[in-house]
Image: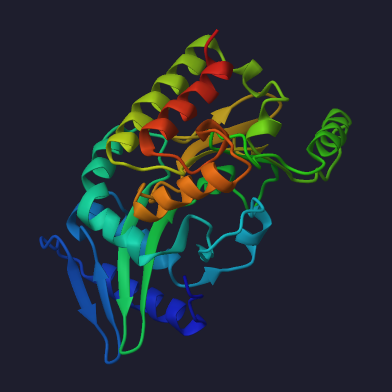
Length: 322
């Protein structure tokens, strides 16, 4: 996926502001607007518009922040670029043409089914777009920023866990040492706490859910199961459960924010759910299985959607079910 030029970011934000400035409800399934040099297509515009605050979107898109997202890079070899809106409410993220077409042709029907549940874990998508000029096509999604309910600009993020249920390479270098250091600083109520990032094997070493009630753990497990079942039906894989913990200046709970103790809250959401288990992923699975040290399927991230679902659920059952 080619990097998106700065001018493309500027043009898509300008065209999106024009798109959402139209006050009357647009009934067409897909909407196209055009400037002198570029064309913007908004998929399932009428359905997405029911999910958004139009004026808030317009105000938020006035300026983008490219710096803050880099603080939360989980160390993955990201092929996509993304930016926060300056108020940190939304993320504008580049996706591939394959992912765009997958949402258009297949995944949309499952997505709108999942988010009909107000307590869904999916990080919400508010729009998916194609930007086209004479030379290039770029694809974007406008998404909820899971960090926002921590009031990122006023609070401190303590830890971020990116969990797929896989074991191969899902470990963070020096995690044990960093975790112990952070725990000591938390006990002494230090003013500055270094951000801790972890993955699947790291998460097994801590007792993250010990402060959750049995009811809360059961509700969370049921939600994980329900949504991953639908994602498997949609042939989706490679998604993650992201768990963000941090201090909160305002203890008011949003849809996602779960207050723990000592003014600490956690946010839990499913991200990166645009990947279909397609022919490319099937080849990747075969290559890693046959030549990647002959690891069994449960040891690699790239597996078919049903295997991915089962592994994902089993991974969280060990923490959430007695």
